[in-house]
Structures are given as C-alpha cells and as structure tokens.
Length: 120
View 1: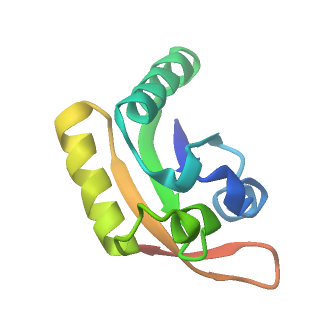
View 2: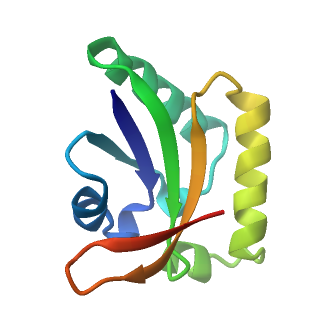
C-alpha cells in the first residue's frame, strides 16, 4: 500500500519528504497547495490512476509555512490555518471519497535532510 503526498513545487519538498516517509510514496504538486476545482480533480485523477497499480490508502497535503507562493500572493490574505481549513472543506464537498486525507505543516527541516511534520 502506498501514500500520495501533495505539496507546492516552489517549496522543493519531494526529496526531504522521501527521506522522511520512505520509498512507498508518490508525490504531486499543486501551486501553493491551494485547492480549487481543477487541482482537486487532478488529485482525484492521479489517485485513481496510481491506485490501478497499487492501492493508495492515504493522501497527505503538506504545507510549508514559508511557502513563497502563498506568502507573495496578494489575494492570499488568509493565514495558513485558514487556507488549510478551506482546503479541508473543499475536499469534503468536492472529493468525499478520497481516502485517508491528512494535512501536515512543516515544523522544521532537520540536519539529516528529513522533515519534522506536525498534523493539523
């Protein structure tokens, strides 16, 4: 069984996440990790395609508090917590069948190249 991790491409998280969670994971990017109809459709389609080969049991959205896309977006006046709350609600409405959805925030980048994650 595998897991799908969704993150912002500007945060360069794939390598540290792979070191943190291991090899049984797939990764995809959504700019700013801000979900809308198109991006959630991509997550759902990616999940369905990957699940043809091996079951994807959990989908993890990893947010970086230092994400420049979210920080620099003038329309993103909401805090990270508000963004995650909005994403949770959007998934519940738009993709209720997506399995094991989890939200994480990077607490710190460790010296061994891994990440300390906090569930939110």
